[in-house]
Picture 1 (cartoon, one colour):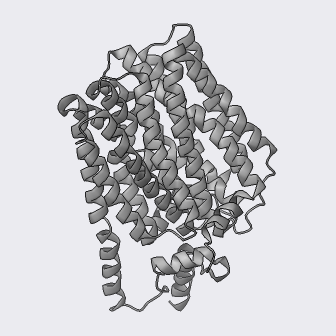
Picture 2 (cartoon, rainbow, N blue to C red):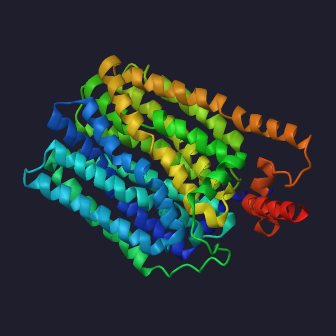
Length: 455
């Protein structure tokens, strides 16, 4: 009987010492981050008298810098050493948590200060996100990227389980200030990991000219296996992944529960997310666009069904498969984007990915809060799930239409570029780097050179 390759695949990635140390540091820091996110929502609800719109605004302010500065963060990730850049951003986030904790502990905190510090945290995160994600590809070899992405998602969702639950219990016992201070201390773990890791080897294929965003956008728009995951995650990130807002509103306004109950709901969603990430890490198979669209439809249906759950118990139970589907969507889109991005463009391409994943939150979060205040939190969940599922059914037709138009053009003009590989061929090449074909951007450049020479 043939042995399953799944477990060895995950263990091989974990056996890489640098990646394992980085992963443990991120886990510790993310537990504190999720504690702060939960406590921040509860603090805003306390300051405003349970205003869903205020929770939506503070969430929007935290993610607005992703829209404003996320693309610049991608340029920095491709221009600066990622390890050094992460040390700066992680330190800035630790200082934000420390200041929020001190303001809350001394009673000087108000809604305006929470808004301002949420924006400051979002600014550091906008620069941190592309570098942190692209840095994984420098810690592991190319064939281990999908597994490393899933394992990174697993630690993130394990923190999502422990963080809100610990925050709910801590807030109920000691208040919100200790949560923010604990988060500030948790950043020491990832800072220690970054300072003790050896610097990665320089990229021999790095381009001599300064990185430009135009190259990333050109690569995305001409590569269907980049355009589909980024386009789909833009819709899901804007409308479908606002559980930070909807879960707190359901706990407080629908089931009339307290901080501990909100923490348990967040933990249930995170349990499903952790199971989904662990399953993705153990698959041992490259990601595919078919898996991405299928799981997005399932995720949308489950989110809509959440709005119909009659009681607290059934709502919490359904959050588990919803979290499973949600993390499968995000990890599959993340891995597809990293694998199909050229190495010298990866930081900028990932900045576009994070722009659409998180940059839509300043629109989606206030809209979710407004719908909740007007029609109820249940209606917000139903609407968000419906939009996500509809996008998964409609968006795959766009790359197909582009390919059809390209085929019609090539039948009337001489071909100057080689045919683009299919999803299956691209996935196979991702796991076999020795057979990797030149990137689309280099092929296009060569074709243009030949065209100029012939004229």
